[in-house]
Image (cartoon, rainbow, N blue to C red; front, side, top):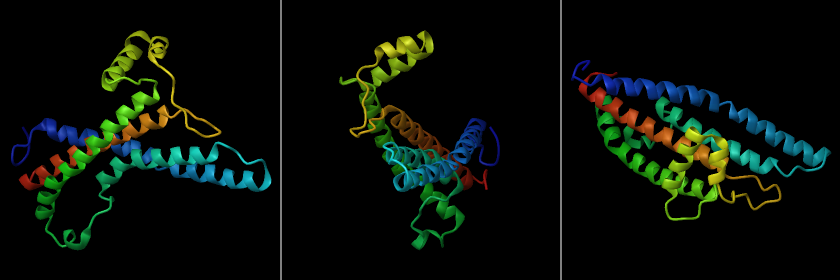
Length: 204
C-alpha cells in the first residue's frame, strides 16, 4: 500500500505503465499525419501528371483510422479530447474528478461495445463465418504462438477484401482498430483510477 488514502501500489503501477505505453504509441502514431499527407499529395500529383493510382484513397482512409484510434488513448491521457466545457470548466478539481470517475463508465461501455463489434468483424475478415468468433480468434492466436504462422494460416478461411478495384485485405486495419479501442479502454481505466487517487489525495 502507498500514499495518503492507502491506494494500492498495483493500481499506481497500472496507471504508470498504461500512461507510458500509450504515450509511446501515441507519439509514434502522431507521425502518421505526415504519411497521410504524403499519400494524398501523391494522389493529387498522379491524377494531374501521371496515371491515377487505385490505392491512394483507401490507403489514406486506413492511415487516418490508424492515426485516430492509436492516438486516441494518448489524447485521453493528455486531456485533449473534446469536452462540453459549458459547466465543466468552472468546476473545482475535486468536482471534476467526481464527475469524471462516474462518466468514464459510459465511455468504457461504449468502447466495450465497439471492441465486441470490431472483434466479430475481424473474425469475419479472416474467413470465419460461424457463431463463435471469439473461440476462433483465441484458437488462431494460440496456434500462432504455439505452432507457428503456417499452422495459424491453415485455420484461415476466405479473407475479406474491399469491394473496390484495388481490393486490399481488410483484416489488418480491423486488427489495428481493435488494438486502438483496447488501448482506449485500458487508458480509460487508468483515468478512473487517477480520479480516485485525486479524490483520496494520493495523486495531483
